[in-house]
Image (cartoon, rainbow, N blue to C red; front, side):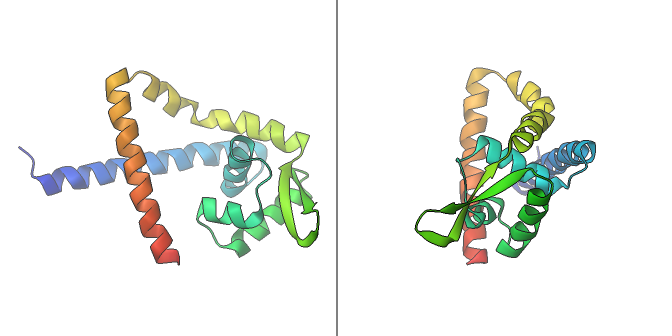
Length: 151
């Protein structure tokens, strides 16, 4: 029987491998569209996430610096993937919207995670609920740790 520490380490290693595999799927999609992996991540997030996020909200969601997000957004704007919209009454604030071209690429790029969806789809309903509860718990606690470290 494996020790608890061994099981914990195996789970962490497995989660790390899933993260690496997701990055590989995103990289393949980025290459296909001549974009960076960050561009693809931003497109997918903006397409499926909250409408018209601000650059600051994107930075928080992606756990990246505002400077990194700013460079990526400028590049995406030059590629006609998104537009910046001024907030009425506050010329310094902007919201971001995908262009029609950006929406098309985001829609197609979103399918890069389809292999993972197919794998999860085959998990039984009860096991899927347990997995969801555990994934949500892990991401919530990890988010708290990262928020404390980045604060």
